[in-house]
Length: 506
Image 1 (tube, one colour):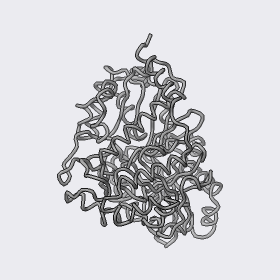
Image 2: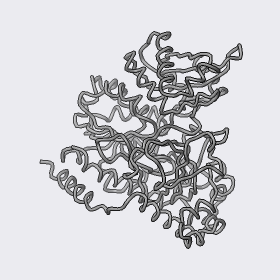
Image 3: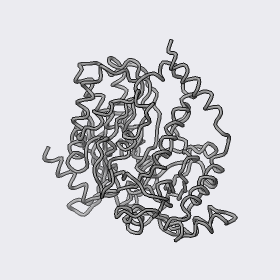
Image 4: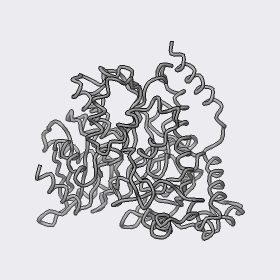
């Protein structure tokens, strides 16, 4: 009998039941008051009158009236550059030891301060995820298995006298002692500088581990699983990890990857979605009968919601200062919003770049729908990444394709006509002419604006299927491999032409 596992499972069940009953909206008001109280004596807090906001009859409204909306560039230019110069008490009390470097899908690069309070918040959110396992049908033995956390390197680098890396590497370097017994690939392998070296070492060591959970961005988790299978001459990953039961995904929508993942498994695997960004641990799936994630509303992050409409965004995909902004209590289910966050790392009314759909207001549940700068609207087509993902899933089912990656751009051809060009990363081919027509039909059905554009300004849809390795090669040359690096779903014309030029050389 799995005695330790049974104890852990019972503890989770009891502690889960003892969680305080409070509405997400009430929890959010408490979080905002706590953030304002703790930061009122910082330079930022004094500038925008946090002490006065706390005295207001409606602190949320006062907060929104006094504090402007920020994106990374604005917050860095006006405030965060002082952190790199060694100043403290700028936007959060004290200083910070770490900077999280983003993968740069919507910006060239970002360095987000990671305070001790944020690391504590991420740990507590991880505990919430573990507690939510009481809702999933897993045996006691599951809680004694290893957890494979496929993140970036824990070998952190110097950044203006601080330590820097991707957030997954920073959090892995700060795991609590009790958790290190379960953590794989372990400290030495996780410190490998390159993705290729890390995966090779994982594949070699894999037979020594009894993994029950895998966590990581789908594209890189899939590559890791394939390399383990290839190196150890297996049919599926369950030949070597028979107790693998859970995959916690995050970073991008999992739907387009599901078909190819299931080919690597011999047994059913439970998929649990999570939302860990460079700026914090924002949400996690807490129940099995939904694909939505619960916002972590009581743990150092205050959320705001901007209706995802053209009038609320400028031409660069940034939220306008006069945009309509809602608190959680005012959102509507089924509607799409741009997410703003204020956190214990000193981000304030910060546009994280993601769009979400409210799935269940009462439970504070959301689904990630895309990125503000990955919204395709060159000639009025107004396609969201969520609609693209859904269309790609339909293509996979229709043509029996396993599409691992895709990207799209609307560009002008030699005749000055606008064309929607798609590259799909797959390991098998399809009849392109029929695929073009089918994809076009799916998008017309999903989006009336796209349908109008196709009848007026968008002359053609062109689809090319290429080996998924071409995407990885481009990422290695222009972004990076592994960790939290993501392939942009939508590219601007200049970047897309560079992408095409690179593929032409392969």
